[in-house]
Image 1: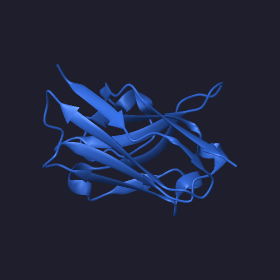
Image 2 (image 1 turned 90 degrees about the horizontal axis):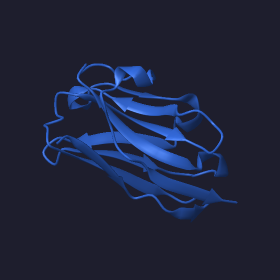
Image 3 (image 1 turned 135 degrees about the vertical axis):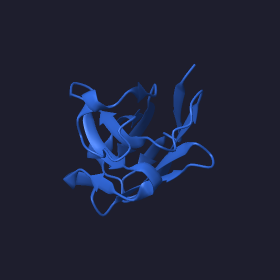
Image 4 (image 1 turned 120 degrees about the vertical axis):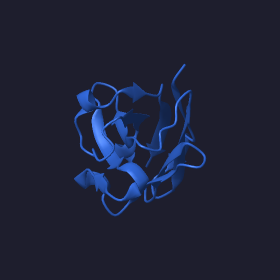
Amino acid sequence: QVQLVESGGSSVQAGDSLRLSCAGSGRTFNKDGMAWFRQAPGHEREFVAGISQYGYTTYYTDSVKGRFIISRDDAKNTLYLQMNSLKPEDTAAYYCASTRYSEYVGPSARSYDYWGQGTQVTVSS
């Protein structure tokens, strides 16, 4: 069974940092493009960041550029999202996803094949 399991979500203060992890199992994800999405209550799921096979290419939504860093450790089959200078508007459930298109790092949720169950990040002012 293929699984992506997120962890690292927490309640923090504005300006704090968090690192999210997404551990894959049941399949080797090293040839996949991978991404983080988030969904706040009452809002649609939105793309946060994507990373290609081997990490050659990354892509971020404008609101997190310069604050968030996506990375991957293929030896551990794990995806990360380092989140710095957190803001209340970053509050959401964060989901990792993977696509068999190894170079895809874009925002189309339909392009991703596997999804985690989400981890909650709450940022208070």
